[in-house]
Length: 427
Image (cartoon, rainbow, N blue to C red; front, side, top):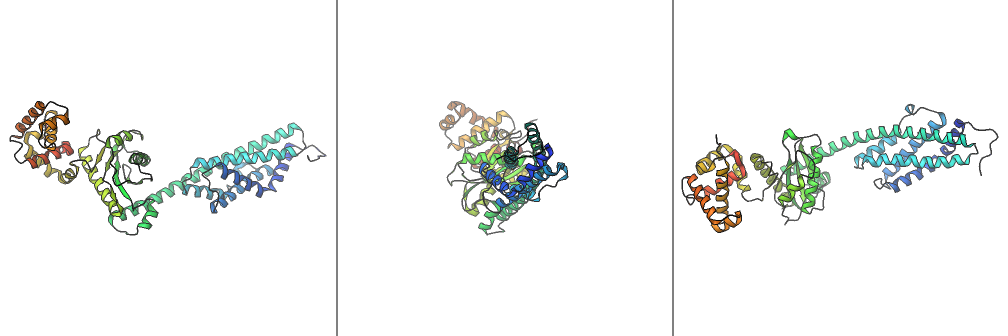
């Protein structure tokens, strides 16, 4: 039944009366609000210590709003609840998106207004005063939610940045320990890095040229790794460790028989944002802790070759590609390799389109067991055209290709992978 009033209430008195009535039931109101939030927002955990902290945060905010309404206090003169700040920090540490936190405040405001409007209806007062009271409550709650949300988001973002920095540092340190063999406690390492080690791995290095690096490059590397993981059929989140602002290491949990499609990965890289598009070097699938190290070493060697080659149209390099292993050895001493290539190939090592075609044809000829027919089929050319090119290559060599064939093939492999770094400049 409506309350019986002997004297008309002013708007201020009406608001104070309603706020006081609900303030007396702040515990029940806070509990019902918590239940609604945990039901409507799936990211909020429904249980444990953090669930109790959510209650304390709600209660503190509701208390503040009631004090503002009852005593006509300006919002800038209240203090944010310490529980609200701590709850924001906990969500940041758990990776709950900040959007869920902001949404919780909006839904909490809705729930509070619903209860206040019901309380307003219980008081017998003229419609104009009730409308003015409604307007006052809406204005105060909106101002408070806007005020507290800004502070809560600032606390969240600061804690998230600090937490990620600490986590990243811890993960990077533990990964380096694993790579250097300074730890054998696999269980403890897995817990820190958030990645299983007793599985087959495929290691990778992702990088961009330093001049193209951006502050958010790690997020781009992470997106690229996630896309590559899907292509590889990996059902686990890849491990991504930032090395600097322009590079990162990654590991994927894969099947031992996985065969990456480099062309597919190349096309996927263009979808992760840019420019610059990340370059990727891959190792080969290896199992267990030892495999974790070996596939990473292979990826690093593949990156070294790719960086020497410096070919933007070839953004994906795999240690499993033919000739890459040899090229990685030759890349360790470019001066010696360059001199040897020049001595071995003569004019065939000249850096121009004509001699590049001859080198490519001769290398394929060797790879197809010196078969003109098989080479022609691989190049979609007439067999006589292949014969002409082989003869031209011999002329550039200054000797028959049967002379020291192994050295010639090895030098051609160096040219194919290391490019201008070992070729003879053409003036």
